View (cartoon, rainbow, N blue to C red):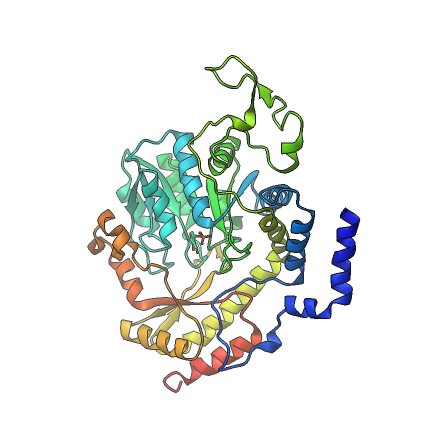
Length: 434
Ligand SMILES: Cc1ncc(COP(=O)(O)O)c(C=O)c1O
């Protein structure tokens, strides 16, 4: 069967030029003034699409299996983790991360987690969903992350962790945060959805953190359509995370491990239940109150191909950010987001900081009118939104409030090609006749 599939794939490659053409949409197709420049999108080609077809044709089970397992292993190797567990989204990864840490450390309801008021909602929501209390620290104009110098002011005996989430990929001062973490014995958790590959002082941001989550939605550095990852070096946390995303089951076998007669633990059929004096299958023993957040195996297959592109993606994001920053800095009253001295940023987007709300609104409207997509600095201040208004008083976070007025970003993803950047330059230089 395997040979037949290989034969079919080869025939697609050889004989079907149309298929290959459709898989590899290229720069040449961008038509200025007609096409929209999306702020991001999947950077994929023939290889990912073939991987999907192959995974469907040779997959026995469709749900998480060997491709997911391989992707978890390769992802761990590439980003310095011992263990990774794939789920169906970055939001699910955050939900499982917080739930797993609550169980691992035995946090109590009402314990406190420190985070930024500016960012994506599903960094915050898992804290609330797990009956923990979010404690916000206003952001800093230097890097638009929460102000590390103010973290110690909010630490109490209920503080259990700091949850960082660099929105545009650019790190905060991790040395200072690591010092606080050590001094107060509180772990750092990383929502790495927007900062995969970012480093501080030569180390990945995740190297400073107990658990990292990641998103593979198409606007992120690598994509599997939808998808997410929870990564850690602590086996027990990994096992809890795997269990929570698989109905809460005790057995965490994945892929071919599930086909081993006695599972990876070697004792699949044993006396697992205290209340039952008999042999029972470990796969039907439930150790946690879980969810089903598993991905499809074909998402793992796509992830494996995306990892091969990661170095190129990183380089393109960096160079696009540099060029776009230079272009936008020419506008009077505009500066772009810069990284701190020890940071090496895997940029999610190019941050545009305007002197006034009027300038921000005019510039965003102008770019949108010219089919160049823009994005707010995500939620601005999450506490301004109906869902979160009861979790804090916006008056206490003046910079987060100002961010919604003065900051937006445009994409620097590799789907933004040289031709598009040249068009963006022409348009920006015409803004108020620069
Ligand atoms: C910082 C951050 N966390 C979490 C998420 C949620 O990821 P997903 O869309 O995969 O659920 C996003 C989404 O863009 C994000 O930017």
